[in-house]
Image (cartoon, rainbow, N blue to C red; front, side, top):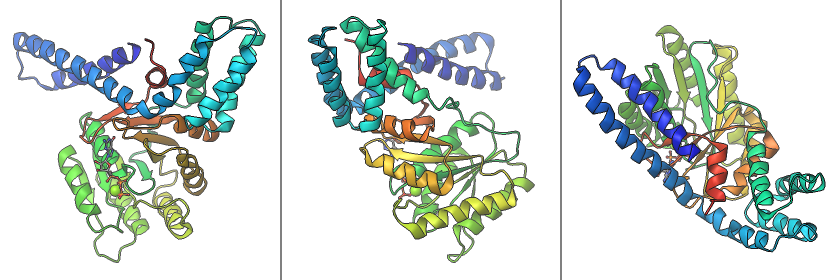
Length: 353
Ligand SMILES: Nc1nc2c(ncn2[C@@H]2O[C@H](COP(=O)(O)OP(=O)(O)OP(=O)(O)O)[C@@H](O)[C@H]2O)c(=O)[nH]1
Ligand SMILES: [Mg+2]
């Protein structure tokens, strides 16, 4: 419910913005338009929530037995239940360290008398996961410094949704009046620049691509930042080729891209976002460790939450690396990107019946 309210507020803010811009709409016609848009947006918010709920079904299936486990809950046998809960969390991709931490928080509250009933333990479990998801203490918004342009570097393994997420970000910020330049830094895959050009067109962003097949991505990114500094661009978003986190040569190339951006503009890139495919299990923890080691991530984007995602693993990533999840992808169109809401995510994993 809270999530729906947040989404409605988010979309209403967009409606207000477009309403202010549209001077041609008369007051009477505007009120009608707002009513109609309000209804459309409420319907969209409900659909987005449904998609997250549907998308986390794989984890929820595994966690379904948690309620069954709690139905036998007694304070006297709580230690047995907690041990079984720990096992269930591990099978739902939470990873042993995170599962232990979540269960330990409940154990502590049982000892201090704060958790007594079945309902208490369920509520405490959800809160304990929300606490982990928020533990980085960092904002889930993109943190744009005063620097102009702000530069984002988008990284991740093959097919995770990097280019699609870039298209969605360009659309989101472009429709807020931000001047965006997309950098076709995936110079490896033949069709990658074309794919990004499609997103640039859909989001009315500028695009810069390699001038020759020999141009390296680090040199392209250097030129892109230079161009952006000259032509008053607000936001530069650099795409990169998908790469296996275990490929040392390709990971070094990524570090080079980052250094090259910083050479042209000290302090940049201002955000380095790792795109994680929500349908990957605990392997995403290994990916996140390696990318973080190489390019010092500032945040995560969890994609494909409209598919059959496995939500448990991302809790481990956040727990170990203390990185905030900034956005979630819930589809393939420009509008299918949402700010991450920890409570809504945990509600989707443990729905109240
Ligand atoms: N359902 C769904 N599909 C998504 C989402 N994000 C991306 N995709 C799809 O995932 C596939 C891969 O997306 P890309 O954006 O090309 O992924 P990439 O990381 O850029 O891939 P490479 O450049 O090959 O490494 C495409 O078919 C996208 O439409 C999402 O949030 N939901
Ligand atoms: Mg791509």
